[in-house]
Image: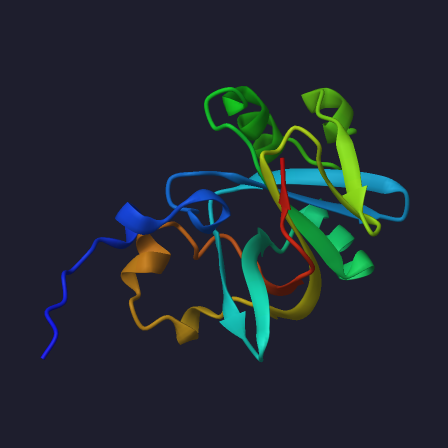
Length: 168
């Protein structure tokens, strides 16, 4: 019999596969207009025989409109300390009201037409496979709704197929 050593997940998570405690930048476009938003939730995995990411976007966000129209998005990982103000700005301002890219002073690059943040260390461009709104009745642990105040916000979960991983 083999002996197994328990390891905390946070002790082995690295780079793009570590979402805990970091904000990501979700970038998408609506026609020629590019939008970005910072988000504290997301992940990577393998489902339907595909490498995927999953992100959560508020239903009333302009980001949702962009993703729904284009069918794609990217996840950019930036230095959390160096871009702290930018991450806050991207989460507070609506892309409907102003050009958030210009306001954040970030630069946009693209991979096969999918926009991403050029200042990122790692980027995951994705094509949407699945989108579904959160349903409060589906939560087994109702404390999540209460503790994160999800009863006032509607979120859409997107599952996107990983097109590639871009490393700087």
